[in-house]
Figure: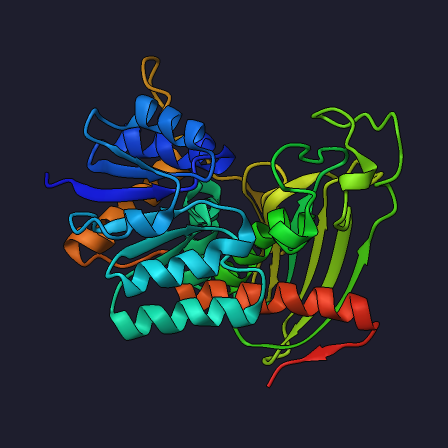
Length: 359
């Protein structure tokens, strides 16, 4: 199998936690060059995932000059997603950009426009679409098992799990807190399941209520209140043009035991679905309320547990197939653009205390 030659821009947490191990696992992607503002991180990425010939850069524009690179991965803080992605597309490279697409609609639109102008592939790193539970519910929606899905809930609630490393708490670099970080995954799943990308209006609230507390019980140790410049939780109410509605909840720190992340709940005219305990489909059969729980691990024999491929590996295979074989993308940039529009509208609504309406 011909290898796709790629460049990695950004060698921090998301690169080492997701993309680089997945690239190594699938085996059909060759890392030609790596780039990071901190040279030591780029060197480490080369040593662990590259080859002796892998080039190391601290300036991504130098990486983009390498003709043999077919695709680049943009794995940097949110603020630079659009800038680097547009430059890469204009340099003739296909782009896998980590989520969220951009810090605002204007920047995300630039990415979509650049992809259309250049004819290059652009996709966004919403790997939760590839999970077995996500794919099962998506199939149920596509086959009409739920009927008309007119209400959804996008869950991204952590009790006390504020990321204390990198630039997560930096509003300038990230564009926001849990809403743009993990809320984006839950909203993406919900819109994708509903196959509804036409929002009419948004109301939203953001809170910074726990950020100044000490002895926090945080999963990754106490945060620094002075560096905590983003919200600690956010809520949004989204009305779609066809009358459907979505509630979005996102938090890094919230006094709640109802904890769910990167999940969705859907209500349709025939049935409902959620991810509260694996997959649950609730419906009525023969005049009785029933709950169906599909077995997603496909196990059936003592020596095989039926484990599915990891979502992040399926994500890499899909990107490879789209670039090298003309396959279809699972995450399309126009869909990710709508996610960004809604997230930005929630922030704007929270700031103005008014509803935000779309054209």
